[in-house]
Amino acid sequence: MRKLKIFILGLILMQACKKPFTPSVSISGNNRFLVIEGIISGNDSTFIKLSRTKKVDTLRTVFPESSAQVTVESDANETYPLIEKTAGTYACAPLNIDASHKYRLRIKTSDAKEYVSDFVTVKNAPPIDSVGFAAQATGVQLYVNTHDNANATRYYRWDYIETWQFHSKYVSGYYSNGVDSIKARQPSQQVYNCFGNDSSSNIVIASTLRLTKDIVYQAPLTVIAPSSEKIETKYSILVRQYALTSDAYAFWENLEKNTEKLGSIFDVLPSQTQSNFHCISNPNELVVGYLSAGNASYKRIFITAAQLPLSYSPVYPAACELDTAFEAPNPQIPTQKPISVLIPANSPYMPVTGLFIPPDNPFGGPNAFTFSTKGCVDCTLRGGTAAPPFWE
Image (cartoon, helix red, strand yellow):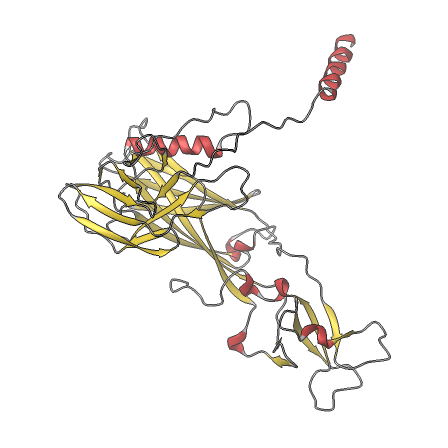
């Protein structure tokens, strides 16, 4: 018992001696290294994203690298230029890449610096066997299954695009013209049902090198929380599978360790991630990224709310309440709000339902409206009303 008391006293003293520690980070340097993302694809458009790293004290998250010249080159002296589609994103139509040749990427930035990758071999991904899900207490676990009968792939990477159908908190039957009146909303003007989308930001890789057969079983992709609006109506995920070389796999594995598996004393220490890009203008300059080439394989699935447990309860992402605004003074309701709060074009409110409160409007229309904030009424603030072409 005495030893236990001494142990507890020691723990209390340890807690009392804790002080916050803020590491001193040097941010005086102005280095903004080039970051290169993307693969050279044959069965789909090739997209290459260029951006710059940022200092740790910078709130801005992305610095796209615009106005660059980006070209795919083969070891057979073929060249394929890419066009800048959006800031920092360069693309070209599917390329007729030949597995008997090697390919590389050449980049010339607006400051006249030139970057080039090593020539890389073409490695095509085998088909995805299936994409599945398991409804668990923590949420919906998405996973992927695949295999290669030739035992030639061994190294895999996946990314994905999510699309989901959701709705606003309230159905709005009216809208303000922003000038002088509130009008009935037509079916084509509905802002209740919308579609949202997102792309993966986590690194998903797997290796079967230590297995007898090249089979991947239920590799985890992502988890959707039970409270997420992604699964309140209908959800879809498009999974893309890539085959990697051993060097490319080492790059992604190291990047995963440096970005996603830090936080405790038992995690790996950060290290510099090896790249196959080089700055010709300045060989000592760090370049972030790793180029691969090959055809990806694809698989899409849909999940409806009816396939998930009733215990799942999607939560609307805003605190929503209804209030009432009146067209004309009503002595029976001294706390009424004037309907003018819904009229200005910059109003933060939107009408929801029309009300008929005595004395009635002589023109027969509603003389009062329930209303709420735009975030609770207009789903287009977080998505679009048009269903994607693939939606079932």
